Length: 337
Ligand code: PBG
Image 1: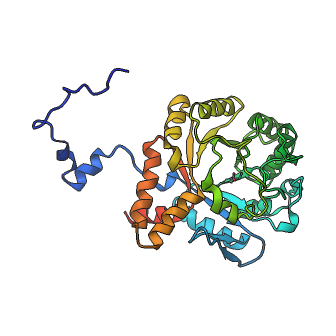
Image 2 (image 1 turned 120 degrees about the horizontal axis):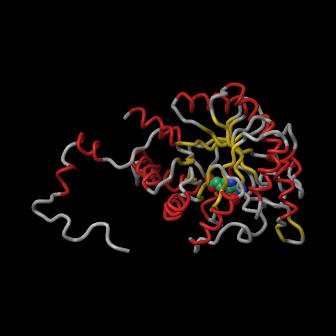
Image 3 (image 1 turned 45 degrees about the horizontal axis):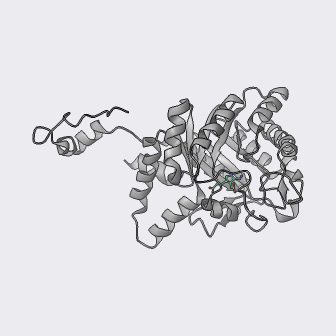
């Protein structure tokens, strides 16, 4: 590749990089990227009950909320200019089965939550995961037989889960399961059920990551999970494979693609955005949030500054938006200027 900047392009002392940085107004003018509340998607956890708020110990500042409190919280997010929320259920252990059948119950917690949120805040986008892990007694994203996570049999359940969620009013179906062929199967199922306008945001490049630990506490799947997810989630060593995954999902009908986790995979965010030019999102996952909060709570990092710098890094890498548990904090900081 020929260099974009030949060595002779600018030389000291005529060129002084610090000139453009000398005043705040000038730094603002020269800024290449900007973070805005419109870039944020807020993942939230919902639990049964009324007026119930359960702190998640491994995610300080994050609570599981009963539907009534969730509706209020989504109103707060909307007031701050956040366009969309991603709702995740904490499913009672007694409802978890090997076939994950609660996932396809049209009156399950997630569907009731979606209906309530959309009724109160029709202008806020609602995103729902499609995967069996919150509902499956094995804690896996797919059906398990003889210790193996089944692909094609799982697709059938995922399609029903997607249709049930779309029926509850979910705007965006987000398959996070990493089964092969799921985006195409879900697209067909949605279309056949009359949900041609329901969007799909695929977790296109989702890695088998240690950074999901606190999330699994939050949805109560960490106790259930047997083994790991390496037979379906990607190897952190791989980058070219992420492009193949994204290409397949786009070909199968994904409207938007996501890379997950976020910070350790900024190179993948950049590569996916450059290769496909699709609406591309990064998931700043639970473990990333926990790291920042833990350091800040010890007084080792300035939470506000580190948060904005982190979120801006996703924009710089080419992301159109970020899923972050700190969306409300960030939006408040951006509002305050
Ligand atoms: C479920 C799912 C996970 C996350 C989003 N959807 C966990 C997993 O795959 O084990 C992780 C989110 C986070 O860590 O913040 N399929």
